[in-house]
Image (cartoon, rainbow, N blue to C red; front, top):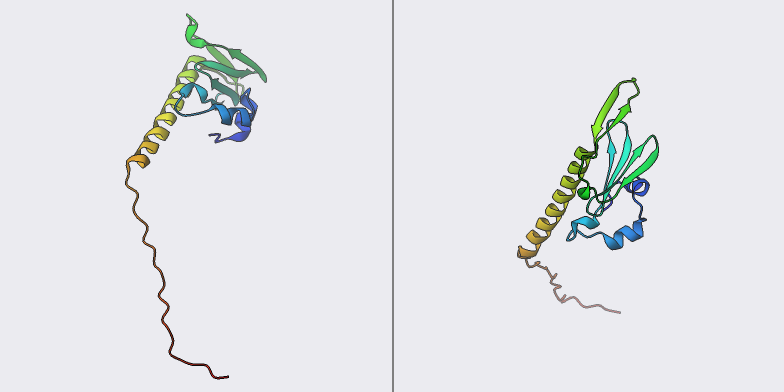
Length: 139
């Protein structure tokens, strides 16, 4: 489910139609997480199992299958509007994005199971009773 269509469109490599056909909560790796990094307002995307895309000075960088790396992803330094340098950890961004995705899938799944196991109350339908009139019409 795309909660921020503009953000998704600028972060994802798929268009809406492709993503809608692919994404399903039963397969967590099919869901993407698009985020804005507060440190510098850049965009970040987690897709597949662990592929990330992120912006550095308006240029996109991509790292495929980060779980296969034998090293941390490292940090990026940004300078805010006041000229203050700030570092942020790519590893921490990935962990938070994975956690958000896992929690989203669990929430949707448990909600669906809750609805499935809840009895559906029968709807009471009132039918209006029309009484016969004993009045007669004269022409």
